[in-house]
Image (cartoon, rainbow, N blue to C red; front, side):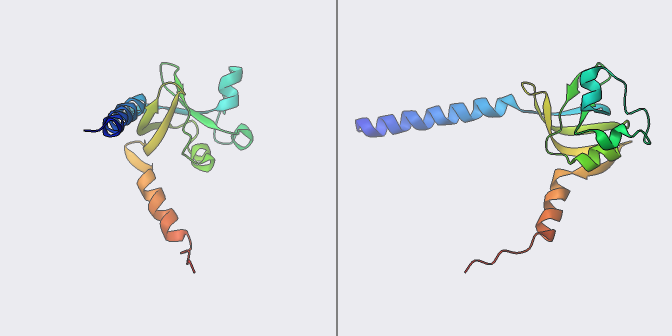
Amino acid sequence: MTKTMKYCLLLGVLMVVLAQALVVNAAMTTVTGKLTGLSCLIKGYICPIDKADPMIAVERDFVLVTASGEHYFLPNVGLALKGRHALETITVTGDLDPKFKSIYAKSISVGGKEIWSLRAQQEMEKELMPKVVTP
């Protein structure tokens, strides 16, 4: 085995080890809590108070807050869906990233009924997106 081949093999093994380390950072989990307005959480307010609270329209984002007070961002879930289910107890299943306190959601349930899934969203996007024709 030549010196170059040894370096390539060593580099390949190193890349596999590093890729596994990155995957370990995000762990599939299920978290239950209520969707609360981010600015309310930051300022320490309890809001929105109800579904008619104008704060729902003003909020720039909603976060999942657990019974123990932990909060998680849901970066791949649309604002409209979060606003529609603000104040409701939801269960989110997805990849938890503890460093950024976020969950890359795979599915969301309310009362045991799935209301959103990444798979369904991707299928809908594929169906709605126009087919690109390359010359």
